[in-house]
Image (cartoon, rainbow, N blue to C red; front, side, top):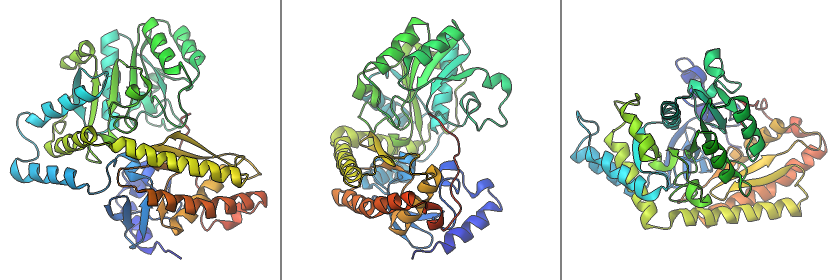
Length: 429
């Protein structure tokens, strides 16, 4: 049996100086059940990582979908190394890489006429919201999905502690694939909504006409349409979900897959809207940091040159097909379902057979970690994953899912746990 002694000791040490022991909720003990999980990764290579106890894992998280090519991609690392050794990291004036990467994004992304850079997805979404408010002269925002940690968005979730009530009152959630819920917001706040911002796809695919309908409603009521492509960008297609679904927003935000894990994000969109960047304040000392931009240039160039995303999607389809066949064969569709884009597949857990959803999720994590697979219920595939890796995942599920089903039917899921069950952080949709 795998043990996590060093991880748990490191967590105890970290919690003395770091709240939660992690910089990111999704990398912390809120998502990985204590006692049966690793908490610190020592290194990564390709599609695999090794924790501080020396355990090896096939990684299905890939740093929350930010590593698209694979850990330690040779071309990206080489570009970063050359930039570091030959030129430097940050300067007193802009570096040419800012222009070169912006040109690549304009060439690849349908909505992109001008581009500005940040560091995190939250920088980009917050910048897009400020831009939309400046452009329209309105204050209220309609949201659907997850859009980062800053006040304007997180105040609309259950994690709103510390956000002023006045700020919370300006953000309003609507339901995905439900145009009537968005129309209701426009009726409730006439001529007050500056923007509609949504993830164009998350767990569920857009129903026919949904994204087109969102755009039509936004423009009918004088609001801007913003696609949060922090995950879907440079993953679903070279031009993001807007290219895949054929719906072009006014603005779009990007992060994660932009630079294979290096910290850079971007806002891109219509030139007339983006020009207001000269008047609002969206400015970062490290917005033009050259190592991340060198990584972005290498990543985007590889996506343009090679069929990277087509290959990822093909492996994702192999995984989705195998999972659905398994659920059918084992009569497990009452407990589990498969959804999402092939590059970002979800194994959804349903409330059934008297079993608690989070007990089941905890048991899945516990058993996956013992079998050398690191996952969070999603399968964030990369260029480095092989067809053999997909078969490894399917073999694990063929062993694990029927066992979970039998335990749920017998009411034995809690007694199989060797740890306290997970609890939800907050619900998005």
